[in-house]
Image 1 (cartoon, rainbow, N blue to C red):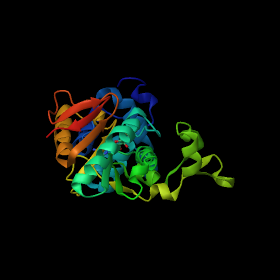
Image 2: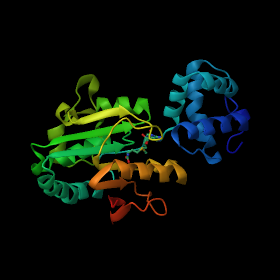
Image 3: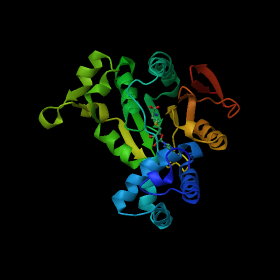
Image 4: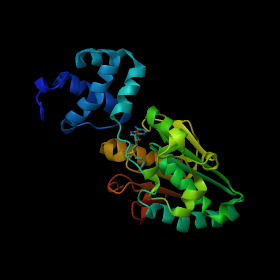
Length: 282
Ligand SMILES: C[S@@+](CC[C@H](N)C(=O)[O-])C[C@H]1O[C@@H](n2cnc3c(N)ncnc32)[C@H](O)[C@@H]1O
């Protein structure tokens, strides 16, 4: 075992159990867990063992085989949910300055004033709330039918997203005027917390969705944000996903990826139009 020896750990995570857990998570969620993540797997799942009162990973793996609820808890524990408001802020500038004007222009020919946006892998909600904050800054959309679908595999993080309650320090990246309009400070036992204004939540629909599974929605979407999600997938899973995204996008349609992700060698259905911003071609 790399890092602290098994003897220093409360439980032993042997090769067999580590391989079982990583292939289970890969099979269900597409998330790759290589041997370098062993300590992380241990740290996150040791908490599950304690919570369940189990004394070994062998017993825990047995439990995972027959308990769908625990499998979900295991996957929740192993997802990486790092996110923040206005993360990669150039994406929101592009949305406001290029995508929305193009949509508004296309709406004349289409004869409908409607926008559909999908935040795929929305984590604790900062991304879809930032999308809505950006749309609120677009007066052209005032009487439009707008819906933002926000999905994630991790049921625990989705509950946080729906609640829209964050430590106050997390709104530092939000422009001041937006903060006072759309966030409320907690008082008394909620001191130090802020809550998203319910009006900002009205057009956002949080749903549980595993990107590897069948998708219940028909689309099409005008914009898909899937940022800092595929980085955990292998190339084949990414290729399949990008093809499905292209099928789900309208024309014009845009795909936003995370800063270290790209479509290179994985899809020829998009054209690069900005920093990790892609426009669907066909
Ligand atoms: C690092 S967060 C990115 C959050 C946000 N998009 C951003 O860029 O700030 C990655 C999210 O992808 C989700 N995720 C991982 N695998 C997934 C899958 N197979 N289906 C749906 N969501 C998945 C995780 O639960 C996690 O919340």
